[in-house]
Image 1: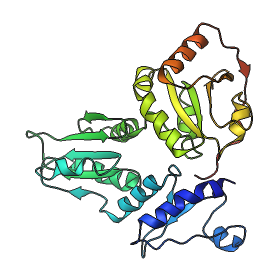
Image 2 (image 1 turned 120 degrees about the horizontal axis):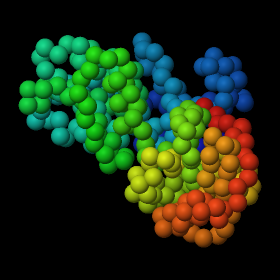
Image 3 (image 1 turned 90 degrees about the vertical axis):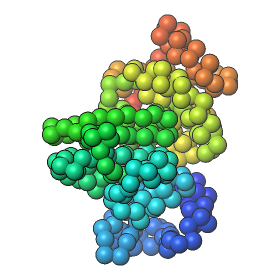
Length: 295
């Protein structure tokens, strides 16, 4: 069923990428091919390049993001650019990292290149000269409309933590590859269920200010009801629903579902959160079982 839901997005990828050799396999009809490609669940996307290592795509089932993934794979791991060119490159991807590196800052240069090699599938990395004589690492999260900066450090893991922190989407779509990143933080999760890409994008745009306001305590997340219908029941919502809202506390197992018919707007969502805080919404013990497939 999830593969059928994905078909329109995959067709959009095919229609938009004439310079890519795109091949599809039905794993039910071609189990050997899928087994040899290490596909245990599907749909699954693999990028093969002559003489290079295969890359797994683990992002959202969205044509635009899949095409962005393919474009990154064809770029250099790190794009070296003159300062005058840099501004034109900063909106080339959802998340762009820009390193200003001085001529003698070899440790920072090595760290940046190593991190770029590790995360080049997901983000764009650019390197240029020092800024006012100093080295620095900038993160441009165009999806969240945020910019962050940090200075070079010799401490192991600091720069990688910066990359993970500032690249995180403010309102992510939950899939198997990222689920644990949010359920394991200790924060509650406000789940929104959507049935179409248009609904997803509208919710993400409208809720961004509210998600920023509550970011210290709460993750705003989204679930595709077509791909993960079982999550409705797990989160206290009626099976077969095409939309829904539910607040989950992974620490206690409590779930606070909204079962009414009001339109889900920023004003309503904030009222719902306040109702939960004030004890006006009945909780039930939920269990987070099941799980997502590879995408």
